[in-house]
Amino acid sequence: MKFPSFPIKKVVVLVIMLAVPGILYYLLQEKGKNRYKPLGFFGPKELASSFHTKRGKKIQDTLYHTIRPFSLPNQDNILVKFPADSAQITVVNFFFTRCTSFCKAMNNEVARVNQIFGKNRLVRFYSISVDPEYDNPKVLLEYSKKFDEKYSNWQFLSGKTDVVYRLAKEDFLVDALKDTTEKNNFIHSPMLILVDPQKRIRGYYDSANKEDVDRLSDEIKLLITEELRNVKDR
Image 1 (cartoon, rainbow, N blue to C red):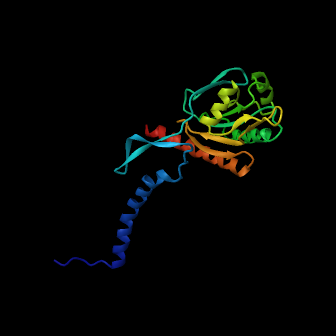
Image 2: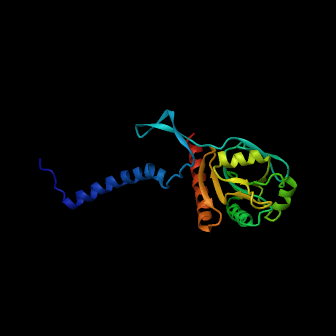
Image 3: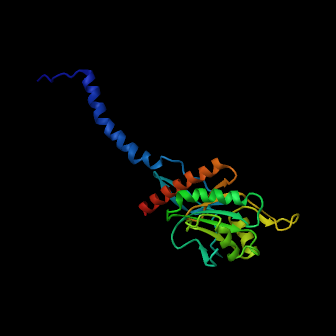
């Protein structure tokens, strides 16, 4: 029996029609999961004794620096606990109300970011005073009125001096200390610090650089996406 012959062009077209759906499926299922570059981790890290498997390869787990749990009173004299009961993304900065340099501009940038995420339950903001002896809850409440009162997820925190300074240096890895050369002045970082739901530092952003603060907004969105995917995979 003689089989019918097919022109080579028709064969090529048929092969392409059969192959393309499979390629698209692979790209959507495999590559679609990694359309953004995950954020890095800041602070000391060490290898764990446990392992995980990725694409059949055994990989040793890494232990990253994490923020220790703490509790500080806010502007309403309510004790705020970190971490909160629910997993949330946190933006932290250090300031003081008597600051005559960059603190007001820094918190204006916090307010600008908060305008984007103020209604998102996954995001919260902590501004911690490095002058806690003066910045009691009453002072913080008055200071907070300089900003829009709709920011219910933005807390102004204070506490004992040694606790705050230890938090800054050992946990958030930034400077916070009294300026011995000038009365009522303190040395502290202008950075906004991004912390993920697992209490790991994922970014530092210079509050004096609007492009850097814009990057913070973008990377909060990345963390939200990352957290939603983690919840879906659990």
